[in-house]
Length: 612
Ligand code: FEO
Image 1 (cartoon, rainbow, N blue to C red):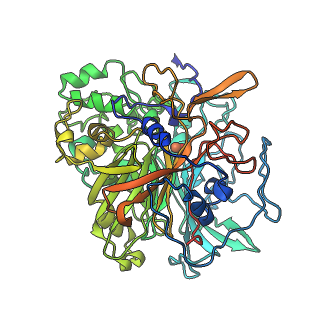
Image 2 (spheres, rainbow, N blue to C red):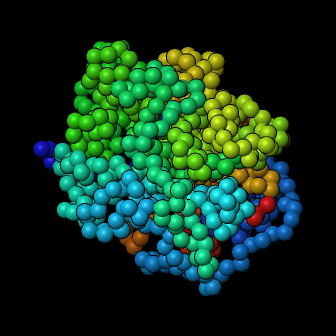
Image 3 (cartoon, rainbow, N blue to C red):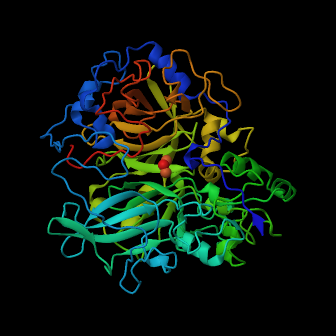
């Protein structure tokens, strides 16, 4: 038995592995700010971008910046339908606080059974059958309307399916871990029974809800209900399907894996499926302390570079020790050292890490269809995915963020042009394959003058094909190691890109950049050097203690594609809103947000369906 050192409490999102020399967004932002009278004056309803959907009025206000490179947003048509609630006051109370006139109820909680054959959740540490219960750490979710006949009906507000992520679980080294009877085993090896529960509570739930008496409740035993957990078969799709990089003992053909992990943000495709982003998946795997030499000796030397770039240096320990649950394959897969004798990796899990880090598409209406990992959209710490406004005869774009310090913003553009009839086809995942398995992946480069470029991540690009740091073999390699490809083309390091949202009125794209604790006035190591003109480098002080430093509160970026084309390779950009405490000085509170608007670390972002 090995004692496990209680890990330092850190946010897994907040670990940077990007040591490339690419310019950071902060540097460029500083230059941009230096020539602009930026965002001065009140933003009015702008805080609704974070708390209640971006209001169209806020866009108009933002456009009062006369030096903005972005052209004026298109005036929306139709009637603005704001919810009209009264903002609630800030509070540190451990309570749900909602505006007057609203009510809330709990729809589903960890452990609630999806079928009546599974006992009610006792919350006493002895519950089992988690494969048929709601998982832990509910995160991104999407609503899929359902008709009375049980068919897709986007307009339905009475009956629906919800697709919901279960991102993570509590650290078992906390004595209060509620999942296990004894509070969990904080040492290795982990008991199989504990690991089995933890494998089951990560993933996705799909469940039916019905409104009755004005209140939604989930429908236990609905034929639509299902779970995806870490033992659920999942298909690999797109250009990397069958590639050498995806060969494992589970799938010698490199076409399949099990589960989807650390699912954070979500998105909804124009054809009615759920997409889910695998975010901090790397931390669940371990490598032994001599794996670099083993890989090098076996001809896998370049995989060491890739593993480090994705946060798995040799000797890295796993988040929960799942690899110690037993000798069964479902446990061994979390140990990704090269241990087998095969030349292709079909007798160990040296390539298992390459089967995670994707946008995963599932059909909420058909649980018989296996989920599909869309490799064409690149592999990184995916947050959410937002879709361009589908226009007949035009490609579809998917906007994506890689949430880690100093990582990039990406765009995928489909080869297939949008066909409106695809929105209602019954073979939804086949439609998904038509749009999401064939296209071009780009990384964003932000220029100081407010322009930007989408740089294609293609093996045909000499900067990628000749990249000295990592010898890409082919396009599949570029997609599986998209971070390295983006390094190679000089993409711009960002302050942890989280969700994005596309304005349904004009197609503009908003990205939340949640914060960056890796900026310092006097940087060392991998810290990011600020520019004197950049007001976003500061310390958050509580009393006499500095509790955070860097870009503490984050900001929201706005992108306008050239000529409004989703497939454009150039764009203009500006900062829509800076997070800050309202009491901060003007050098920090750049957007002059007030006490009933102030916010920090913007993350989830969505336009309501009624906005347009
Ligand atoms: Fe799971 Fe980037 O938040």
